[in-house]
Length: 593
Image (tube, rainbow, N blue to C red):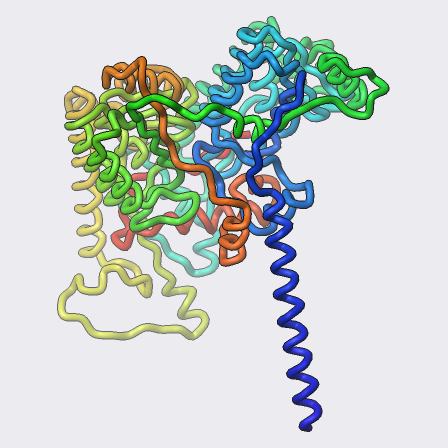
């Protein structure tokens, strides 16, 4: 027995040494990814790999994704949208580059890669072509609507001879859990205000209500009109011709796409590489051509030099109470950051980039309060990305000026309460609850039983109160009457184009437009520097953080597999964190296909 324990101890020591050595090697491997001064080869082709999720802020990859990158695989290293656009604009004046090459499939996840984000990226690509006069080549085997929207106007849209092109139109499908909840004994009671506040419907119904269907159809029509007008204009096709392609063909084979005028040539990958060699001064017989990826090129951008500072702040994800987690907006965290910027005399203006479906009403109010206070001392400008709905609009409404893209989804001025209980499910498995209380409403937040009529009535009072406050704030900040706000509120979402028409936003424009306005408002147009969140820590620090419980890669697509859909549902439910069960959130999780 003594020998056994000696052997066991020796084995454990050996295992510990092996694990330690493996960790050291892992850190060394990741450290090799560390920052070195990038050198861009002469006549390099700038490569924009679309194989990522375009977000406003830096995404924190998990350990698995960092390892894949270290080994030369994985998705493209994420570059925040505003940095990516700065890099493309800088490249348009870079005489050392020979061309821009675009390839890959956009991988949307969460609030990333929405139509508004793609519009800003599309405009940057078109500016590069116009300003630089250099060739822009886009190539894919499979073209989706996202990539075609980005690249239709680049001049050289190539497709694999065995490829397909998706021009099927826009669709949005809502998942309903009402029947499943009933089957498994989960009961959900709701309180709400607003004809269109249908965020509760997936948990209690089996299909879209008529108001929700009307709202969603109008929104899809607005987004589809932008797509077919933009792509059709690039390809010299009318919106009616684009609609006919969508209705009659939908998914096109490569010969059909060429005949329809949606692509310029059918080329195999090696033929495209030969053309890239040619534009960069190489011969077809050469093994490679000079190139630089966008993440590396972005690191060569000159440091800002202005003496005045404009702070760029990102509100990306669902709004939750407390500090929040990766991919969410913590009311406490963001309000503290805004307070710091408000008190910093070096900061002359604040630009808040909003990309949020909303969430906790108290957290939204916490953020808005800091913006109202900041506005007394310096300009506060909002740039709306893909989403700025409900709580996302709540935090935006008092800005000096609100910019949105035509495809921004905003509004959703409404409030709802979600009050689940698991009494039937628990009882079926032998679980019961019992206790005492000192008043009829003392245990209102329990999930052990349905709410009483008195408890529901108090919950409705809470929802009505917050909705009335929401309407009052919008009326005051947007210089509208309460009746005018009531007409456009009711929980309804609007596209950016419609929001401009009804007075919810001030101007159609990009983040760059918002920054320029902030500089003008602060009277620092000729001397300012834009300061946003810093780049993530070194690869070693990121790996150690990921090993300690990092989140899954934000850029990983979660819409294509059943597992991903389940993860999306679970993470969405996690955003319902308010103990009062009251939320200012858009009426559905919008997944556009």
